[in-house]
Image (cartoon, rainbow, N blue to C red; front, top):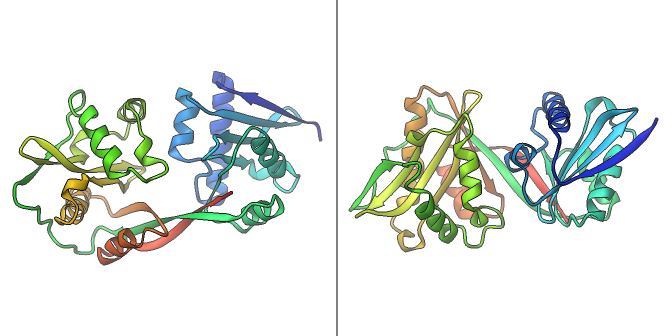
Length: 282
Protein backbone atom coordinates (compact mmCIF):
# COMPACT_ATOMS: atom_id res chain seq x y z
CA UNK A 1 0.00 0.00 0.00
CA UNK A 2 1.41 3.37 -1.05
CA UNK A 3 0.64 5.92 1.70
CA UNK A 4 1.34 9.65 1.70
CA UNK A 5 0.33 12.59 3.91
CA UNK A 6 -0.43 16.18 2.98
CA UNK A 7 -0.80 19.16 5.34
CA UNK A 8 -3.09 22.01 4.32
CA UNK A 9 -4.05 25.40 5.75
CA UNK A 10 -6.73 25.72 3.06
CA UNK A 11 -8.32 22.94 1.03
CA UNK A 12 -8.66 23.09 -2.73
CA UNK A 13 -12.15 22.51 -4.18
CA UNK A 14 -11.17 18.94 -5.13
CA UNK A 15 -9.83 18.29 -1.63
CA UNK A 16 -13.04 19.69 -0.12
CA UNK A 17 -15.10 17.34 -2.27
CA UNK A 18 -12.97 14.33 -1.37
CA UNK A 19 -13.00 15.16 2.36
CA UNK A 20 -16.78 15.61 2.44
CA UNK A 21 -17.30 12.31 0.59
CA UNK A 22 -15.05 10.48 3.07
CA UNK A 23 -16.86 12.03 6.04
CA UNK A 24 -20.25 11.08 4.58
CA UNK A 25 -19.12 7.49 4.01
CA UNK A 26 -17.94 7.20 7.61
CA UNK A 27 -21.16 8.74 8.95
CA UNK A 28 -23.24 6.20 7.01
CA UNK A 29 -21.12 3.31 8.26
CA UNK A 30 -20.92 4.41 11.90
CA UNK A 31 -24.27 6.11 12.44
CA UNK A 32 -22.59 9.25 13.76
CA UNK A 33 -20.82 12.15 12.08
CA UNK A 34 -17.04 11.98 12.64
CA UNK A 35 -16.44 15.72 12.26
CA UNK A 36 -18.27 18.42 14.21
CA UNK A 37 -20.19 21.31 12.69
CA UNK A 38 -17.21 23.56 13.45
CA UNK A 39 -14.90 21.27 11.50
CA UNK A 40 -17.35 20.95 8.62
CA UNK A 41 -17.63 24.73 8.32
CA UNK A 42 -13.83 24.99 8.27
CA UNK A 43 -13.68 22.78 5.18
CA UNK A 44 -15.74 25.35 3.29
CA UNK A 45 -14.72 28.64 4.89
CA UNK A 46 -11.24 28.02 6.28
CA UNK A 47 -9.93 29.64 9.47
CA UNK A 48 -7.23 29.12 12.11
CA UNK A 49 -6.73 25.36 11.73
CA UNK A 50 -4.96 22.86 9.53
CA UNK A 51 -5.96 19.66 7.79
CA UNK A 52 -4.12 16.38 7.45
CA UNK A 53 -4.96 14.33 4.39
CA UNK A 54 -3.74 10.74 4.21
CA UNK A 55 -3.79 9.11 0.79
CA UNK A 56 -3.61 5.36 0.22
CA UNK A 57 -2.89 4.21 -3.31
CA UNK A 58 -3.75 7.69 -4.58
CA UNK A 59 -7.16 8.00 -2.91
CA UNK A 60 -8.09 9.99 0.20
CA UNK A 61 -8.29 7.42 3.00
CA UNK A 62 -8.04 9.58 6.10
CA UNK A 63 -8.74 13.16 7.13
CA UNK A 64 -7.97 15.19 10.26
CA UNK A 65 -9.10 18.66 11.30
CA UNK A 66 -6.30 19.89 13.54
CA UNK A 67 -6.63 22.54 16.24
CA UNK A 68 -4.81 22.45 19.59
CA UNK A 69 -8.01 22.23 21.67
CA UNK A 70 -10.32 20.41 19.27
CA UNK A 71 -8.80 17.96 16.80
CA UNK A 72 -10.97 15.38 15.01
CA UNK A 73 -10.09 12.73 12.48
CA UNK A 74 -11.67 9.96 10.44
CA UNK A 75 -10.56 6.97 8.38
CA UNK A 76 -12.59 5.73 5.43
CA UNK A 77 -14.58 2.59 6.43
CA UNK A 78 -12.90 0.62 3.65
CA UNK A 79 -9.41 1.53 4.89
CA UNK A 80 -9.70 0.75 8.57
CA UNK A 81 -7.38 -1.71 10.30
CA UNK A 82 -4.41 -0.57 8.20
CA UNK A 83 -2.73 1.75 10.69
CA UNK A 84 -4.06 4.94 9.13
CA UNK A 85 -5.83 6.08 12.30
CA UNK A 86 -2.57 6.00 14.23
CA UNK A 87 -0.85 7.81 11.37
CA UNK A 88 -3.45 10.58 11.53
CA UNK A 89 -3.27 10.79 15.31
CA UNK A 90 0.53 10.96 15.38
CA UNK A 91 0.51 13.55 12.63
CA UNK A 92 -2.02 15.69 14.48
CA UNK A 93 0.00 15.51 17.70
CA UNK A 94 3.12 16.59 15.78
CA UNK A 95 1.18 19.61 14.52
CA UNK A 96 0.34 20.65 18.09
CA UNK A 97 -2.96 18.91 18.79
CA UNK A 98 -3.50 18.57 22.54
CA UNK A 99 -7.16 17.58 22.79
CA UNK A 100 -8.76 15.00 20.48
CA UNK A 101 -12.49 14.43 20.00
CA UNK A 102 -13.90 10.96 19.27
CA UNK A 103 -17.54 11.11 18.20
CA UNK A 104 -19.67 8.19 19.28
CA UNK A 105 -17.40 6.80 22.03
CA UNK A 106 -16.33 3.84 19.89
CA UNK A 107 -14.13 1.17 21.54
CA UNK A 108 -11.65 1.41 18.65
CA UNK A 109 -11.17 5.12 19.32
CA UNK A 110 -10.65 4.49 23.03
CA UNK A 111 -8.07 1.79 22.26
CA UNK A 112 -6.22 4.10 19.88
CA UNK A 113 -6.17 6.88 22.48
CA UNK A 114 -4.81 4.53 25.14
CA UNK A 115 -2.09 3.29 22.78
CA UNK A 116 -1.03 6.92 22.25
CA UNK A 117 -0.95 7.61 26.00
CA UNK A 118 -4.06 9.81 25.97
CA UNK A 119 -6.63 9.93 28.77
CA UNK A 120 -10.38 10.52 28.67
CA UNK A 121 -10.81 14.09 29.98
CA UNK A 122 -14.29 15.20 28.90
CA UNK A 123 -17.56 13.75 27.67
CA UNK A 124 -20.34 15.47 25.78
CA UNK A 125 -23.74 13.85 26.03
CA UNK A 126 -26.29 13.80 23.26
CA UNK A 127 -29.81 13.76 24.72
CA UNK A 128 -33.14 13.55 22.93
CA UNK A 129 -36.88 13.38 23.48
CA UNK A 130 -40.00 12.91 21.35
CA UNK A 131 -41.87 16.17 20.82
CA UNK A 132 -45.22 14.37 20.88
CA UNK A 133 -44.84 13.78 24.62
CA UNK A 134 -46.30 16.66 26.65
CA UNK A 135 -44.19 19.30 28.34
CA UNK A 136 -45.12 22.39 30.39
CA UNK A 137 -45.92 25.71 28.79
CA UNK A 138 -43.13 28.27 29.26
CA UNK A 139 -43.52 30.84 32.04
CA UNK A 140 -41.43 33.89 31.33
CA UNK A 141 -40.20 36.07 34.21
CA UNK A 142 -42.18 39.27 34.69
CA UNK A 143 -41.09 41.98 32.27
CA UNK A 144 -39.62 39.60 29.70
CA UNK A 145 -41.08 39.01 26.24
CA UNK A 146 -39.97 36.77 23.40
CA UNK A 147 -39.15 37.94 19.90
CA UNK A 148 -37.29 36.58 16.89
CA UNK A 149 -33.62 37.33 16.20
CA UNK A 150 -33.15 40.11 13.65
CA UNK A 151 -30.27 39.42 11.22
CA UNK A 152 -28.11 42.47 10.65
CA UNK A 153 -29.22 44.09 13.91
CA UNK A 154 -28.81 41.62 16.79
CA UNK A 155 -25.42 40.02 16.14
CA UNK A 156 -23.21 42.23 18.30
CA UNK A 157 -25.54 42.28 21.31
CA UNK A 158 -26.00 38.52 21.00
CA UNK A 159 -22.24 37.99 20.98
CA UNK A 160 -21.99 39.95 24.22
CA UNK A 161 -24.71 37.93 25.95
CA UNK A 162 -23.27 34.68 24.62
CA UNK A 163 -19.78 35.61 25.84
CA UNK A 164 -21.04 36.42 29.34
CA UNK A 165 -23.33 33.39 29.53
CA UNK A 166 -20.54 31.01 28.48
CA UNK A 167 -17.56 32.80 30.00
CA UNK A 168 -16.10 29.52 31.30
CA UNK A 169 -17.12 27.31 28.38
CA UNK A 170 -14.14 26.11 26.33
CA UNK A 171 -15.83 26.62 22.94
CA UNK A 172 -19.13 28.50 23.01
CA UNK A 173 -17.85 31.54 24.90
CA UNK A 174 -15.19 32.19 22.23
CA UNK A 175 -17.58 32.75 19.35
CA UNK A 176 -16.85 35.70 17.07
CA UNK A 177 -18.84 37.60 14.44
CA UNK A 178 -17.41 35.24 11.82
CA UNK A 179 -18.91 32.24 13.64
CA UNK A 180 -22.41 33.65 13.63
CA UNK A 181 -22.12 34.99 10.06
CA UNK A 182 -21.17 31.53 8.78
CA UNK A 183 -24.18 29.95 10.44
CA UNK A 184 -26.53 32.62 9.16
CA UNK A 185 -25.39 31.60 5.66
CA UNK A 186 -26.34 27.94 6.24
CA UNK A 187 -29.49 26.50 4.68
CA UNK A 188 -30.86 25.52 8.10
CA UNK A 189 -30.67 29.04 9.57
CA UNK A 190 -34.13 30.39 10.45
CA UNK A 191 -34.40 33.62 12.47
CA UNK A 192 -37.95 32.65 13.49
CA UNK A 193 -36.41 29.76 15.46
CA UNK A 194 -33.77 31.98 17.07
CA UNK A 195 -35.73 33.14 20.10
CA UNK A 196 -34.61 36.27 21.96
CA UNK A 197 -35.72 37.08 25.52
CA UNK A 198 -36.13 40.85 25.66
CA UNK A 199 -36.34 42.85 28.86
CA UNK A 200 -37.10 46.49 28.19
CA UNK A 201 -35.18 46.54 24.93
CA UNK A 202 -32.20 44.63 26.36
CA UNK A 203 -31.33 41.07 25.36
CA UNK A 204 -31.64 38.95 28.49
CA UNK A 205 -31.19 35.49 26.97
CA UNK A 206 -31.82 33.36 23.92
CA UNK A 207 -32.72 29.92 22.60
CA UNK A 208 -31.31 29.23 19.16
CA UNK A 209 -33.04 26.20 17.66
CA UNK A 210 -31.89 24.30 14.61
CA UNK A 211 -33.69 21.97 12.21
CA UNK A 212 -31.70 19.68 9.94
CA UNK A 213 -32.70 16.43 8.23
CA UNK A 214 -36.11 16.63 9.86
CA UNK A 215 -34.77 16.65 13.43
CA UNK A 216 -34.96 19.62 15.80
CA UNK A 217 -32.08 20.65 18.01
CA UNK A 218 -31.70 22.77 21.11
CA UNK A 219 -28.71 24.41 19.45
CA UNK A 220 -27.74 26.94 22.14
CA UNK A 221 -29.59 28.26 25.19
CA UNK A 222 -27.94 31.15 27.00
CA UNK A 223 -28.97 33.48 29.80
CA UNK A 224 -27.22 36.70 30.77
CA UNK A 225 -25.67 36.28 34.25
CA UNK A 226 -27.85 39.16 35.50
CA UNK A 227 -30.91 36.96 34.82
CA UNK A 228 -29.70 33.78 36.47
CA UNK A 229 -32.03 32.42 39.09
CA UNK A 230 -35.14 33.92 37.47
CA UNK A 231 -36.23 30.73 35.69
CA UNK A 232 -35.51 32.27 32.30
CA UNK A 233 -33.33 29.37 31.14
CA UNK A 234 -36.10 26.84 31.70
CA UNK A 235 -38.68 29.12 30.10
CA UNK A 236 -36.50 29.63 27.02
CA UNK A 237 -35.89 25.91 26.70
CA UNK A 238 -39.62 25.20 26.80
CA UNK A 239 -40.38 28.00 24.34
CA UNK A 240 -37.90 26.51 21.88
CA UNK A 241 -39.41 23.05 22.28
CA UNK A 242 -42.86 24.50 21.60
CA UNK A 243 -41.54 26.21 18.47
CA UNK A 244 -40.08 22.94 17.16
CA UNK A 245 -43.23 20.99 18.03
CA UNK A 246 -45.39 23.57 16.23
CA UNK A 247 -43.25 23.07 13.12
CA UNK A 248 -44.47 19.47 13.09
CA UNK A 249 -41.20 17.86 14.11
CA UNK A 250 -41.23 14.56 15.97
CA UNK A 251 -37.82 14.54 17.67
CA UNK A 252 -35.49 17.04 19.34
CA UNK A 253 -31.87 16.57 20.39
CA UNK A 254 -29.28 18.54 22.32
CA UNK A 255 -25.68 18.34 23.50
CA UNK A 256 -24.56 18.95 27.08
CA UNK A 257 -21.36 18.36 29.02
CA UNK A 258 -21.63 15.22 31.12
CA UNK A 259 -20.25 17.06 34.17
CA UNK A 260 -22.74 19.93 33.90
CA UNK A 261 -25.09 18.25 36.32
CA UNK A 262 -27.50 21.21 36.76
CA UNK A 263 -28.08 21.31 32.99
CA UNK A 264 -28.38 17.53 32.74
CA UNK A 265 -30.95 17.55 35.56
CA UNK A 266 -32.90 20.32 33.85
CA UNK A 267 -33.06 18.42 30.59
CA UNK A 268 -33.94 15.15 32.32
CA UNK A 269 -36.79 16.96 34.10
CA UNK A 270 -38.05 18.00 30.66
CA UNK A 271 -38.09 14.42 29.39
CA UNK A 272 -34.72 14.20 27.65
CA UNK A 273 -32.77 10.94 27.80
CA UNK A 274 -29.11 10.18 27.20
CA UNK A 275 -28.63 8.84 23.67
CA UNK A 276 -24.94 9.08 22.71
CA UNK A 277 -21.56 10.37 23.86
CA UNK A 278 -18.66 12.24 22.31
CA UNK A 279 -15.37 11.86 24.18
CA UNK A 280 -12.34 14.13 24.39
CA UNK A 281 -8.89 12.65 24.99
CA UNK A 282 -5.75 14.54 26.04
